[in-house]
Length: 299
Image 1 (cartoon, one colour):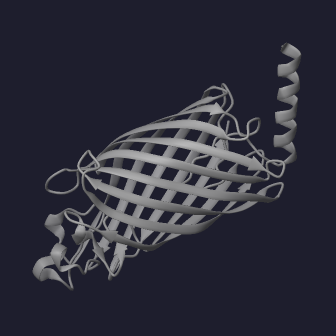
Image 2 (cartoon, rainbow, N blue to C red; image 1 turned 90 degrees about the vertical axis):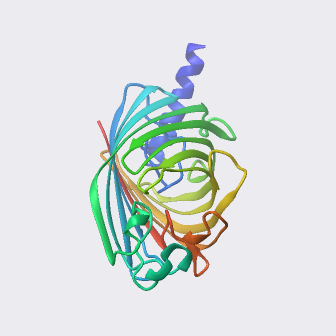
């Protein structure tokens, strides 16, 4: 038994070294894979996301997430986040159901209260709150045809409180140079920035492919199918949208970097959230384009 474990460890280590992989790195911007921190290892990760562009005017929502990860076991990773935000919104809404008589100078979007809809501009920034994270890798894609994992993340913030769960699936091909990863996302959230808190369910599928072109470089593509439901049930769907975009990833022994972007291909809204749509796009928590920068440093 000990010999079998020793041989298995050598095979896994050799595969990772040969591919220029470091444990815990993330090849994707928004998709979670199953490359976790080994037992007893730590990593600092910084994420910066920009959501930009609405029906008109200006909308820039920056989110920063400063994370510390720890490998509790070889298959269980724990993490904590400090979340920050910065919002600048100006004359960006065109739907009369949201703007009333203020069409042409209507301001809105995620983080902007409805009481500011008649204001020509809105800006805010600060510490949003904290998130905790746990990932349990049930099967490893390096040793199984399909890697399976469970993800759990509660968030306590100024803009929203939320509980997010994910089913993570990952398969590796071509000596682990090619990764296919999919996440089924369920999130119950309470948006707190409007006059009245808004309770909703998010049900998403995010997936991606990443191919290691060289020992340190990977290129890939990510997709998101987004769905919102009013209240904490699936009784009334309010939104649906599609997103697609590329990513590029670099990693060496000291750090790794991932750059990703995705653009909204189009969406639909239904009551009571139909005021969030115009021009065939969904605007409340989204933009025309989203950008992600992630940097990880193990220690």
